[in-house]
Figure 1 (spheres, rainbow, N blue to C red):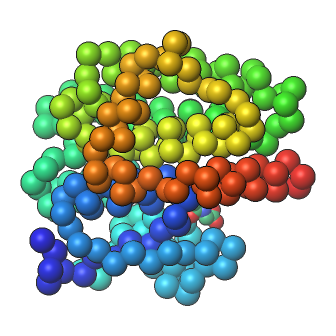
Figure 2 (figure 1 turned 90 degrees about the vertical axis):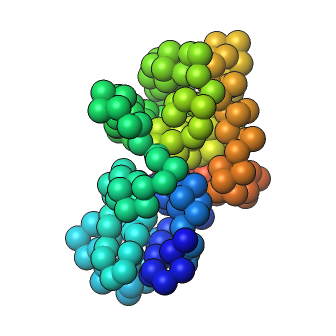
Length: 223
Ligand SMILES: N[C@@H](CCC(=O)N[C@@H](CS)C(=O)NCC(=O)O)C(=O)O
């Protein structure tokens, strides 16, 4: 698949936004060239491809540039139609998109702001994040994955962001965020994600990732 096509992904190893694109490409079996970016010193290719946004991930497919991870995921799904990523049913598809927005807008906003605070300022934000994650807990009830029996759009968005990024950041600060007792469905889902080869392939190495998130948090707090 994709042998005579040009598929390039500009990403960053620790970024959930580019990791989720790799998950989708792997699910589709599309071969791609991965180009690691340094966001402190963005490459001329990145700036040429995305002069306004200047962010990763960027997908290049046969000379066309696609940006914004949700848009890229939809593009991949519509271009390579086998192993669908989004639900086939229009209502379920809308639900998946709305939950993906909840993750990337609300949960990310509150969850990562907690990193910028000192211990005292953190607790309220952490509690707010937990409340938001309860919506995901409900959505997972009775399912293996958000996508049902197989992983899909929301598993990529939420999976790359919450257990394999945000929780690691909190862990670096000594906060146990989403306990088994309070979030049994969520924790079952995380275990199931670790059984999926394409997901495991895209999870950043744990210790290095925690260190990286800690370093970012310290940098923000001391700024
Ligand atoms: N909404 C974007 C977010 C992407 C994003 O925030 N990328 C960050 C890295 S994690 C970035 O490239 N930041 C560079 C910058 O802001 O200068 C998406 O879903 O793709």
